[in-house]
Image (cartoon, rainbow, N blue to C red; front, top):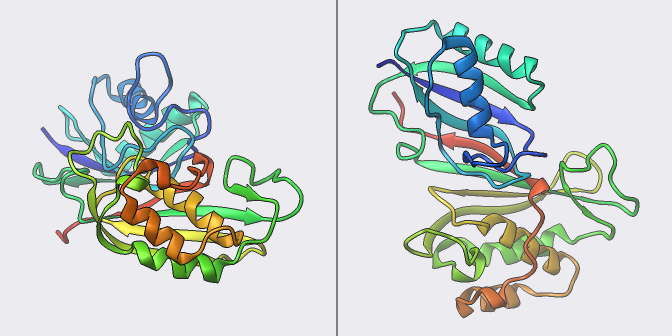
Length: 252
């Protein structure tokens, strides 16, 4: 069966997240329905990461097996045509045929996320549901310094959801940078690792916001990490600021 890689962009607003659910619209089901519409095949689309409700993607990656061999441009354009007809906020950026050993989830070497915060006095309008709003300025430098206390291999129990299904809370965090964005008032938190725990990045973002407001110090963040207790975490940031940015794979 020919296997295809799909690079996907989506606005997660109004969806229940990536994973298929019985009573709610999901990104996975939306793409599968579009594929059925153009190919007549009932398929399972397997993604590199299970984004939560309201979380967006700039570069989600998935794979799908077809019974028939299709030109890659047809796969991309036909799926997009059905997504547009259904007025979905999902698009296939690229489709490529890959070896049957390629797995969007298990072949991934590294995943990259970005969390966006916009600091301004008035509420967001154009960026509503696209970023977390902070009505007061945040100290990005202090947030970045505190974030470095979290980089490395640690037990991240403090920064994962109590509903997380991972077997271990230990992860290797390769990057957690806080930078001022290109737009005035924009702060971006860039995170990279092979894998993340459920709500880990949103937990980082909410905790680092306390640092930016001057309520916590870098030592407080380190103490929260060492506590290995969910109660030690700052408030979990809302999902609308989080974007699944990209996935890295071994070179073909």
